[in-house]
Length: 139
Image (tube, rainbow, N blue to C red; front, side, top):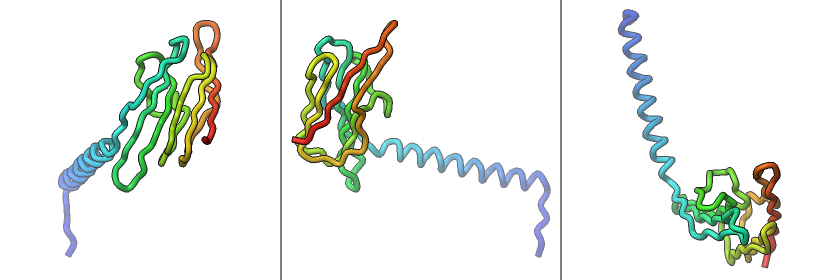
């Protein structure tokens, strides 16, 4: 048996399907975006107070390890997702971070699964640049 549908009925069915898919996409995005917590655990100003070192701990639930992200940001600024991130690792033990001077900082750890590390951070300031060298050392 062949069903004969008018153009109007077909358009309504397609519109309904698109609306259902849109709603499912919104619900999925809402659940996925709420799945991880990201908490600032420490903020250390540089010796000259031009930038802050921010340590965030992320937790995406029982199936993942806790993550540690370290950012360099302007004073009191909120770290952006990947921008200004200098270190990201999971299963971190014995983390110590300290400024050596205005242009250098050191990240020490006992054990970690390191996924991202930048050994230099640069930002344009006025007519020049601010540069921070980053040392990563295992204890």
